[in-house]
Amino acid sequence: MSLVSAILESLEKMVDENGWSSVKSVTLRVGAMRQVIPDVMKFAFDVSVKGTPMEGAELAIISVPIKFSCRGCGAHWGEEELGYLCPFCGGTNVDMDQGMELELESLEVQER
Image (cartoon, one colour):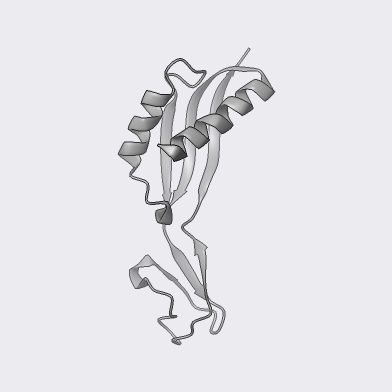
């Protein structure tokens, strides 16, 4: 619910700053590490937008999988090999390249 509240706060600010009358659709990119359950987020969004310029807006969620890379050998891999050791060289100098996203991908709005 706190993620939805933060998103709505940002959207309301954008609506005010740009003078839009309403938001018709919202598309988010959400990383797997955010542990968001899309149906739960959509339900919380639908309940929270009542009486706001986002009421009736459709929320779409693009799930972003976890991806890692190794600074030692340069290998890349996905969440099928979870852990903080490189599955190719055993190195510990590993970066998470994606999976923490919570980004606005697109909006469809109604201008005044």
